[in-house]
Image (cartoon, rainbow, N blue to C red; front, side, top):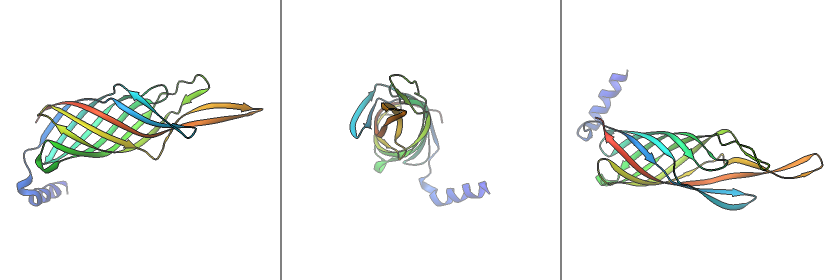
Length: 185
């Protein structure tokens, strides 16, 4: 059945299929975290996070990218991530649009000062734009958002036997990536 599907794709896309390109490399991603606590907006900076990247280009102008890595976000937010993205080159230029999903496993749960991070998986959607300077060096700017926003809590105050907790929410993340990748195929 798989071979029939591959033959079907070859017939449909015919002339548009070039030799597959496989690139492997790494990404450094400084980020701006847009958070909220007690209905007050706040932000945090993450100077660097490191990811591996592999990009396969099965069809001209379309690339499929996989990004495993580690996000260093601060006191209560950080952990391993795994993302899958689709890159589309705009009119065959060096600019591209990127979109996909990213699964963040929050592991920054060290409790102190009456607060703690929450250990859990958070699924993000992402969209962005990038520039491929040459065959090795690229840059992109991507916005990430999630519906599962709470990643930390703090004990605000206690009344008798009741502890009131306030939650910290992740409203979005803006990542600026520096990508260095090398052609394998």
